[in-house]
Length: 256
Length: 256
Image 1 (cartoon, rainbow over the protein chains, first blue to last red):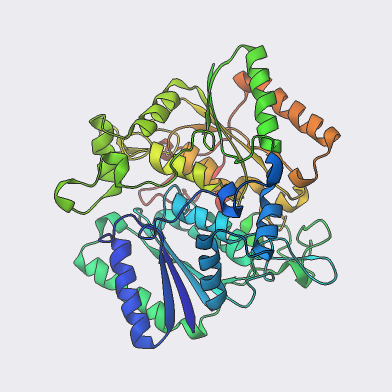
Image 2: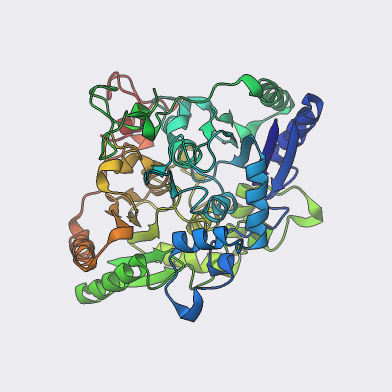
């Protein structure tokens, strides 16, 4: 099993940095192959711009981001840093993204990894022979699985089904469903370290052990059961059929 | 009425660039004062790091992001680009964030504006005299309102209450509730331009007119009715009281 581990934290001695160190040790023991993209250590460029494609389209024409990504990807003309990440991603069976939850989402450096690496023609806009767009359970990254590992300052109760911060699976919907599942990757249940600001040595030992146990069990872990777009559960307007989750609304209806 | 308009798009001739140009013309006509932060034009630094605080804590000590933000903010030692944005934000009555929806969230350059500008002591970790933390309807930015203006390639049906992309108000929950409301800003209903990739001249005219109409009516517009943390609707574990939205779960329960 090949794992790409992407870390986004500015401090190696943080809770996240320590957890990754323990986790990589566990991967060694388990005999899984892995590569690491430590985005801060790499000084990863967060901002998508025309330099990703060797400068603007010729003649100062208007930049259409998706079209330019697809052209540059097909022509092998994406910038070298993006090409390297795509190569790691295609090699991986499981993508792990590890980050502190900032403003209820990934830090900018990681958001920019999605913006720049998941290019049109790979992450979105992938066409099937019959012309339909392959996404939500299908697409350029189909067959892979993805795991979010995140830390939050809050206690778990506030992230529960009626907690003030929102249920964590729904707060992370843009990542789990809108990014992983959209591109074809099957999302695993996120690993969340609660009370990150108040972790003492005993808390840390428990959190690290729990993460290592998740990794040990990874080969057999069953992903979240989001509905595929192509499975007949949505109509032509991409609305869920009335017989499924009848009478219900909200993000939860997209899970079986 | 003072407006801070923050734009995150790499191409001035994009749909977003044109809409902002029309919108600023409308603000002129309406006589509202405004400032613009065009993040790409400013070459805004997206990535939070120790340079935001004049380098690491002394002696190579471990960086604690929140604590370091709060110290540097209180001491006037945040980097000049952050201080300038905070000054604009404190001046504004209404914050407008305009961006294309990439991976169901803001582009990295805008995410980095949250990460770097909404510092501890202003955006979070603001204490009341009795020691409780002011947030969700209260906090350093209380009294302001905030409007997200975004564009998506998809049609509106896919972003409806049972649409495959998720209901747009819930997909944007990390921004509307987790960022605006958390910091004390009352979120307005987001303005979404659907079918952005297929906008012809007539579509554009309609979208621009709708946005200008929103701006005209802005003084009297009533925000979304999220529940405040301090209003007695949540218990000590930050879980919504059982008598409110009884039997329901999901992000929708946090709106009255």
